[in-house]
Image 1 (cartoon, rainbow, N blue to C red):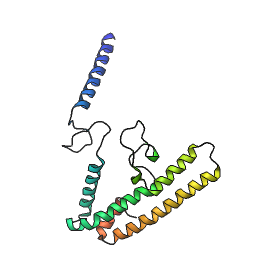
Image 2: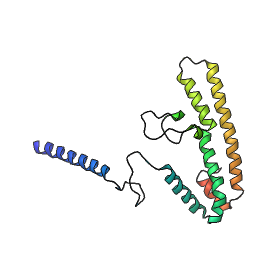
Image 3: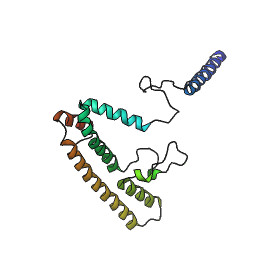
Image 4: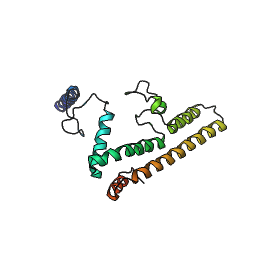
Length: 181
């Protein structure tokens, strides 16, 4: 019995040491990371690199030539941006309002905050105030709804603009990907 306890403790210590050692190895391969892609420090990722890979994948799925992609990409990026903005959510994670005290990663700059995100943040601020009047809450809620409606209209227009230049196959691919209605 004592032998089993000692073996279990040694196994746990060995496993713990191996885990720490693996995390400290620069360039160590992480599960789910493409081959040849070095692992960065824990919790850090390159959003620009991820976005670039995502756009390359979309281009491949659309079977777009380089010339076609030069026309499609800006309109597609606009659709993707407006789509994110209609939800009022931050893409950087963490709390709304770009506040990241003590959290990993940078806060969003005010230039990146859409009107929907701003209205959502203002509503959250009012809701955080336990003494907020119902009229204040309703005003902020109405402002959020109005901002979302405007963003949805802009998104619909951007999607229509994108559809104008797509083949039926490309449009179908983007519908399957959730980027078009």
